[in-house]
Length: 184
Image 1 (cartoon, rainbow, N blue to C red):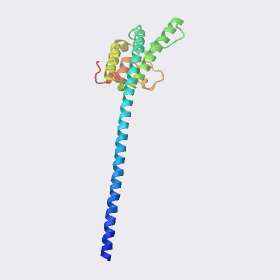
Image 2 (image 1 turned 135 degrees about the vertical axis):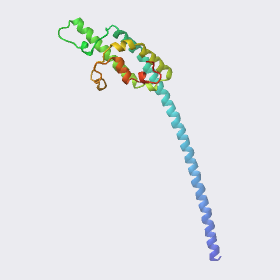
Image 3 (image 1 turned 180 degrees about the horizontal axis):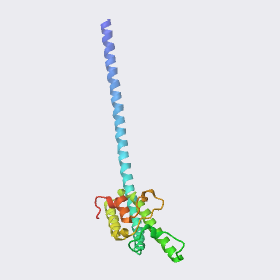
Image 4 (image 1 turned 90 degrees about the horizontal axis):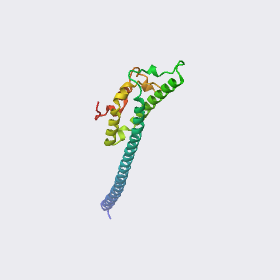
């Protein structure tokens, strides 16, 4: 076999080897692509499942607060109009009954604020029906929220609310009042 034939044979062997290597690479990449596709589908399924659970949890949280917020609003309805935050300060000249009433009103105001701020965190995750029910509940008490002053507690988001009412606070920071279907 002459040199030219040997080189031709070597070239043919290299070509066949290159084709075999290319086919193996293609096969491996196809398998990896299929595995990646399967993993992507699994991730999509897990994400959908997580979204359903987040929605269910948000629905539960909002529905749980329906009764709590309604109850607090009913208790706050006994507070007269025109009250300022300073009207809820305890002083030494108060009788024990007056002090207890002021402390109860303060507690109801702060609990209402905290409950509403807490459910605000999950409002976007709830389904539209529950959002609408919660929106209706909150707006149903707008006349009460309008007459109750914001008490500060130690929450930094409340510090700029001097002279404001719960309705002012809710309108400025709660998604239920700022969402596109809000009715006020």
